[in-house]
Image (tube, rainbow, N blue to C red):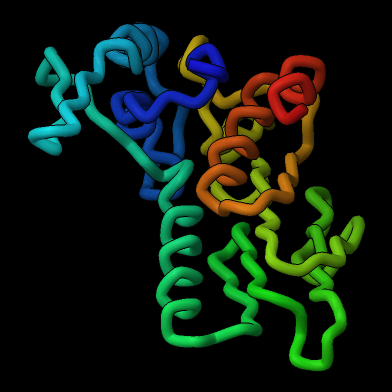
Length: 200
């Protein structure tokens, strides 16, 4: 709700149609994109906390938690390590980094933020932190190129197409990795003015 649908777990029909990162290498027909887009609506997802169930009214609808799954996994791993008495750790979930405490010598962890326009070993900045998570979303990990246009995996639920708003990537620093995961995707989809407003 706070992203006004820019982050929408019911995006599964579009994710399945595009298939970016799982074999999809061409732009789907516009009619198919429109039909899938019509099946994306988080307001139709009915959650029953008492019964621990989720329900969608149409068979063609579905849920995709890819935009928060790594964040959830990082938070859970940190919880398990904390309960086991681990005080210092760096967890790398590929795009989601979570650090527990400081390094053993008391210094801050240094997390490099990858440059979106170059190979993995290049970075555009370093986040020095403790007890935080650093999550980056960008179009350079999963994509294909058709007719000279790059189509990436961060889909805009409103258009049904990969988000295009001039942003190269978004990095969020937060206490919970699942929050940062959702925020990095949402702000990427929203674009600069609305994305900054959401982050603030």
